[in-house]
Image (cartoon, rainbow over all chains, first blue to last red; front, side, top):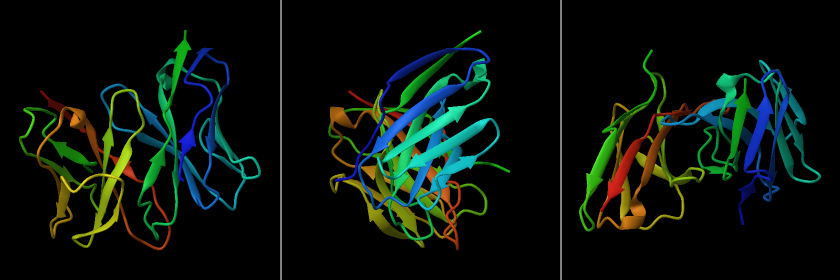
Length: 115
Length: 114
């Protein structure tokens, strides 16, 4: 079946450090993976996505790595700031045509950045 | 440019009642998806609407139904409410096009069933 899971439920880092959030998925048919950030009282906010035909994608201060061999996804945040404190979710998308359609979310990792 | 908007923000209902939640997609978007997020968990897909039809559905009972209007806004209806339906209900929108684009989420409606 479909499932997306996270290795670590919580992550605490110091301001300025790099953060790495990991995610495991089980469905090899997934063709898109997305990272979302959710702050308290808000809906998930898109961070970055990656297609299954890629193994790395970079954004502003963020990098997503995809290892299809071991079905593993990670989000790297450079120079983590207190404003990065939030819950981070990975999500996978299978088919759905040209719209994201159904996203399957993991449980989430709580990132806390200490000044 | 308004993003995804949802109403109401909070709602309290009694078991057995019915509820309707509303969503307006981001300008330029034509596809709306609904998710249920229980406390401490990731969102779970309920269903997606495009061209006023339900296109995909998650593992939710028929008590959950929806509708999409010609202006692309959408409603989520839940009948015969159960205590377990208490959750944050999220609406997300995107555009059905040639390539997959970012799915924007609204702030959600917090539903409490007592």
